[in-house]
Amino acid sequence: MANASTSQIKQARQLVKQLIYPERKFIHLAIVYGLAISLLTLAVPIAVQTLINTVVNIASVRAVITLAILLFITLSISGLLSSLRTYVMERYERHIYARLTADISIRTLMAEHSYFSGRRNVDVPNRYFDINIFQKNIPPLVIDGFALCLQLIVGFTLVSFYHPMFMAFCLLVVFCLYLIWSFWSRQAIDSALEISHKKYATAKWLGDIATAHSFFKSGSHIDYAREKTDQSTRLYIRAHERHFKYTFTQYIALLLLYAAASSGLLGLGGYLVVQGQLSIGQLVAAELILTAIFFGLSQASSYLKLYYELCGAADELGIVLDIPLNSDMSSEKTLEPQSGLLTFNQVQLSNETCMYELDFDIPESAKVFITTEQAWLKREFITLFHAYDTPGKGRVRLGEYDLTEYKKLQFNNPPVSVINRSPIIECTIQEFMKLSAPNASFADIQDAVMKVGIEDVIYNLKDSWDTKLSVLGAPLQPTQFVLLKVAAALLYQPKVILFTQNFDNLSHKERTNLLLMLNEQPFSVLYFTNHPEFEAFDFCLDLDKLRSPL
Image (cartoon, helix red, strand yellow):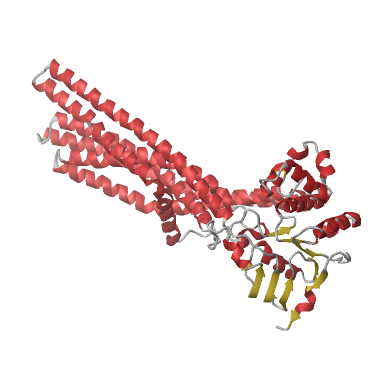
């Protein structure tokens, strides 16, 4: 992969802000708690300075006890606020998980049909796992990282009042921090994006192996799989090595800054004490404040790595957020078609070499064979119904609406059912039937499967109705799987059922019985077939005769 552009890196940073923005109330509250905790934490060095001055000047036991009690109360309040901050961030983790999971689910459901057609982009929802990075990385950044920033700001401000030389010293440390960030942060974010991309590329390849497991049987295929796996692994390791180079360099730079700043503080403070420009108490307080800050800065590379991971995760989740949605979808309309009349009005379907014009009506409840030798034409025709797609030219009406209007509606029962071997979700046979018709009784379900002739098949399965179906219907045979879909359609009674040529694989007896049963149903049946010999259907529509000149 080429290095990410400046715009990609900027976009990744913006996506981090965009993804956590809805949870800003949790983060703002944690920041408020962190501000209070940082201020209260300063009670320790201030108390030490006061104690030293008290012992040196008045040696009062009562003053020491009072100081200890006040310090205990202050630190107890700080501990309480720390507990509340931890609780707030726990609530944040639950909230962002629920919101992003729901968002991914909705966007996947509402995606344009073409986005996932042909099993393309099926790995995109796997970006769900990057939600975990937002769950786990934000709390330490907000709690520890922000606390370090507050401690730095407040501590540097307080110490700067001790002497102007301390102010210059603190500004020099801040400038060095800026240089460490600006020199390597862009490359670190760039390499973090690359790691994330390579990770999902490898995951997709491993998923492809599982999906096409039966393909890898010959020695050449296995060798190819091994080489492709090695290549994916190499690319990921190379990206990881590149990322480590930048983060490790930052880590070394921060350690050097820690060493230089700590020794510089001691030398500068000692010089000012010798010159009588600083008291012993002020020096000890400055050492306590700044040494803690410097040590925290030396460990800041861990917070930077968390931030770089967030950028990589945000970039991947952004892919899900960019899924093209069916913008017409609305849950407010629930109209159902009153008629099953299909009207094709000068519909043109074409490719590079030819064009077909469809201009005809299919009456309600008609039973029609459809034939064509053009595979692309059959695919385009089916897509009109499967996705309620818009033809290049012309209109298709089902009942009182254009077919594209049904794209805007949500139905308890879809008006058109395309019966093919398209994947389903993993569920039991009974669950699948219930999903098709939630109000159907078990007796209705049994009657439907009996009509299509697979009742004995189901009862012969080990778990019968509780048998778990794979996405492609296993353990049912392919023809049994599509017959189960027919049974489901019998339950919810669409206006139109469209069959593909999968049903040509049925035996002559099974096919005849199925067509006899379908002929008695009130819905229209459109059946793509190579064998339109059954006389009970109303007519046969030969699409090849509708060819028009380009």
